[in-house]
Image (cartoon, rainbow, N blue to C red; front, side, top):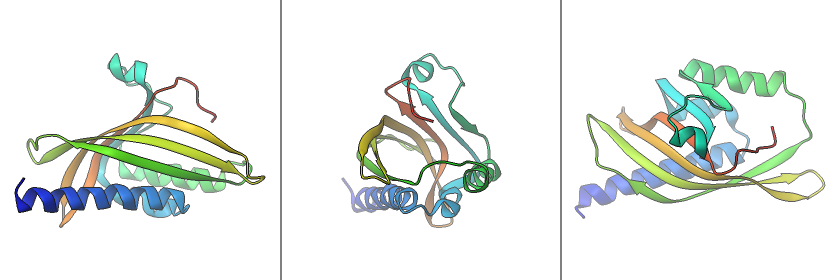
Length: 153
């Protein structure tokens, strides 16, 4: 592994750590900044992903759609206060092609309710494509591939 490979790996590890902390600290207005303007974001089941189906629980095809999603979450949705903790690990970096770097990472999300009850909210993996923009890595696409077909929405 070259020093450049190590530096790239550290940058990407930091990106995923910052991403998890942004979500877990409820800093959702900052979340779209992790993505390119023309990004694609999807939450889907492992079955749909394996079959190549575009169907998703959430599907966005631009950064503006992510901003809109955050605004809807803040203003339109009513739900009991809760906290999430994302555990992201086992990052597998692929070979860079045409300026894009494929990355797969395991994901577990724990949800804690106001009364202290905790549950495993989601398990799966991120299947991402990263690109370098102005000295920082950004998500050009992110597929959140859930191991279960059921999720509490």
